[in-house]
Amino acid sequence: MTLASSFKTRRWALTACAVSALLLAGCASMQTQTPEQIVEARANQRWQHLIDGDIEKAYDMLTDSYRRVTPYERYRGRMTNGGWIKAKAISVTCADEVCAVRISLEAKPPLGSRYGGNINTGLDESWVFEEGQWRFKPQL
View 1 (cartoon, rainbow, N blue to C red):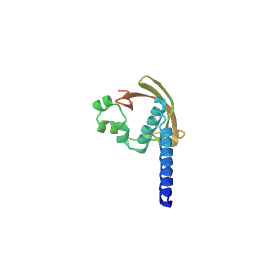
View 2: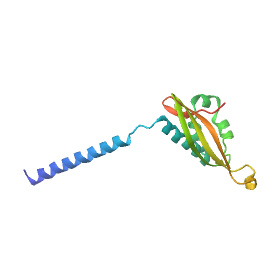
View 3: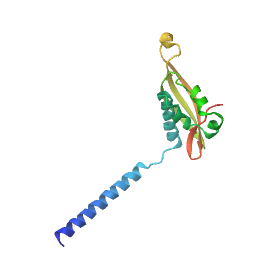
View 4: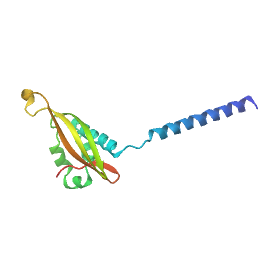
């Protein structure tokens, strides 16, 4: 065996090991999430869009049926930041293709802090699995 062919063999073996390691790492990171985990992440993401004032991204997370009856302009007018500071999904319960989500919400009071600081409240949301994706279903 020549020195050049020995280097080629080693390089091929190292490349094969590296590719195998990457494939194994990729498979490990592809663990499937439960519907509860997916919906929790999407609910938190939607609320972060609202807090950040990115109403269009929040609108894109709504069910198709809601978007058909509520144009973006009307939704944007309703969802202009209501003083929201922080929101977090604190519980998610799913059955079939529907999830109930409890949100903990902190907001600034409309009349300022003269009423004792921020308001902490909770609200319930419904999420449905629609066309391969979990979407927020507002109450009409």
